Length: 335
Image (cartoon, rainbow, N blue to C red):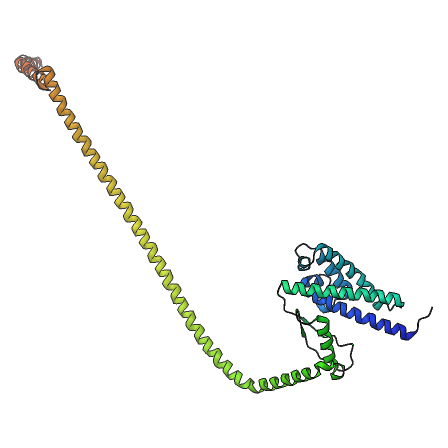
């Protein structure tokens, strides 16, 4: 059955919008949960990742024990979030392949998108609050609106306004005042005027800043050299002080060794003198005891024997002297 073009275009426009919004929320969550996961899938420009790559990255983060996403979602919530991510691929497939949808199928996809959007908002707020993440940089995709493109980045604040509302406001401002919400037109105009004023003031102050910067750099270099010289002096003084302390410690150690040696030598000499003194006392006691036992002093028998031998030699000396003389003269006569 042929479908009317206006019905198809309306449904395709709706699915395209849902896909971009889900990719935006998935990009924000991936940036604060696992930015390296997008690079592993070949998306070095993280914002260029399509919905299937984002779904695969977040699906892995749901079941990694130490991932940021797993730390803020319990097991039941993680499984429900994973199922919604897998179902969201249908939205992207319908958009990419330009498939026609029935009214019931469109409603089912819309319910999936709304439920997943709430889960995205909850996960982003929980992760940002727990890990103190203030904002995420985002490049506005202004292809939805006609007009000139403004190449710049915007900061999506986390924890204040919903990210989708910030995206809508930024894109409306990029498209022009006609597409902006009525409440924010005046605020945006005031902000734009303030930006222009600040830019003009900065341009006027540039030459003065250059001169001040030159003076500041020269002064900072001089101060740096002075500080460097002072630090080198402190280091040299510290090294010399350490060397002096080492020499003093060695001298004290040597002095202690010498004192110990002298003290021990003196103790040994005193011990030797004490032993000699004890030996003399013991020898004297021995003489006294000997005299008491034998009735004569110790060593008397030794002197008597010596006198007896001397007397014997003196008495017998004429005999052996005359024998020697006779023998000597007899030998001469025979010759």
